Length: 381
Image (cartoon, rainbow, N blue to C red; front, side):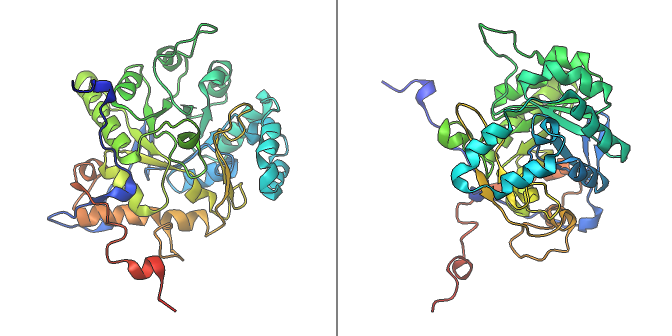
């Protein structure tokens, strides 16, 4: 007797297992168009900074916007709980590893202050920057109207796993179709990794989808819960849902691959897999201007009952501008991410993100190691 469909396994692929095939023609990288449209907002580059306290504060949000990207401010984090976030961030960066989880649980147990939500949004908006803010579904109904009144540009509703249908005996969950109708700004939701969940979320009227469960450098969801799908497969599946939804509705909803990035090559692979943009955490936590001061921690690390994250030391490698545009001071692909994307598009003959999504990709588990023995081991003594 053959196993049931639910017990059959299919192969899934991550960044290190695939490679992009060069095109039959090439073009100059500076002739590529890499714009991203979310609702009525057009961004010059398809790169977002994650809504994590070690990555995004109002200053980073302003800087990212001026460079053409977008940084999402976590309104359930330190910025919205403390009048003096710099002091709290310093305390986190100075804590020994043995005490960091308990410290974060204590820090994040403080209540969110409504006045700080308005102040943080106003700081970003007054600088002329595009303002994107993030909440979990549990707090969205409470703060959505306040965010709209403060004139934020994009609302991101984010949790470890997000679906359009939530079952609970104790409360009525967030209904995305109602949320999209009640706030006058684009709503981006995440995270999901499957075709059906992505399609159902798009059908609620949202303006963007975040793709990825557990791939982040500071996230331990995959270890703690055993849940997740490697990012290439997750992106391919959600891109198929986006294309199906476009055919049935005539509305294009961009998908944003969120998490698991270390280098420019992975950004390029995500786009070829079907992403319209990428969201990065740890690469931006390495910026000199990053609020984490060389450290990075997961959004679920402070959970009071089941922490699903860890604080990692990422160090400081360069400025935010170097990480995005160079000039690079390293050879590992972790800087000049925009240059990497434009160059890859050039060698593939793709003038736009849509054309890059049509480029061939192959399964290539040795793509990182083939011929690289000297890089992997170094010269023998």
